Amino acid sequence: MSKNDNLLAYVAELYYERGLSQQEIGSIIGSSRPTVSRLIEEAKRQGIVRIIIDICGKAAAALLSTYLQPGMTLGVTWGRSVNAVVDAIDENTFYDINVAQMVGCISMGNPTIDGFSTAQRLARKMHGSYSSINTPLFVEGKEVYSYLINEPMIHDALHKASKIDVCVNGVGAFDDRKNSIHQSGYFESYNLDRYKEKGAVASFAGRFIDIHGNQVDVDNIYTISAPLDVIHNAAVSIIINATAEKAEATLAALNGGFADILIVDEPLAGKLLEFREK
Image (tube, rainbow, N blue to C red):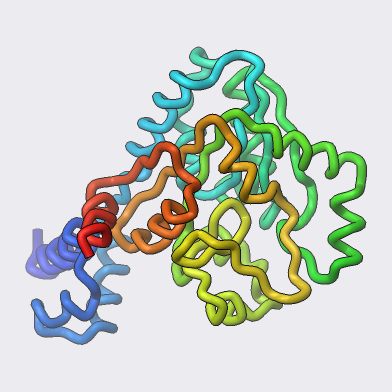
């Protein structure tokens, strides 16, 4: 490793493994916070940082095999974490599983941020059927919202999403510009600051939530998805996440009582334990 590579690896270790803030890292290495931020991004580009979400995905896939039985319904959203689970599914493990898309679409055609593609791919691996919510996740105006949710096919899909036995979700940090909602570009026409002003710290199951796990809404923007109570009512709810920077968002989901089982990597687990101690 070159001297620069050693520095990148050290900064990545401090940030991802030890959970230090960029300001704290800057104090250690004698650099400004913006410089630390650039070093972290460079470490990602060079492959020095490898998020182990795929390992978490394999753990979640193994857990599903202990809970899912033929005829059951599995609810899914979208995002990198959920798709890591889909990637890890063994096609010879499951049979006749119904897959319910729980949220509307935010980007058609991109399997990492498209709930329709996720549900379709998962149903194929589980030798079952799937239901899809072929609408935008967010719509503006109550009349548009009412029309869409009462359209027969959408109404039926939302009903199926409300009857899930097991669900798998990730949690996005509100300020993380790499999360699925931000990457979709959908909110270019909306002011995300309105959600932040009301305390939103995470995106979860197509909704925004505050640190206590309460749903955050703003006037005239409606979400087409299964209500959050559906997750409370499921027999088993699995949340999968990785990296210490998602600790606050994950804590919000835990505070809301949305996880029966939490699957995280070591840095995120350590950060959550720090929160608990405080």
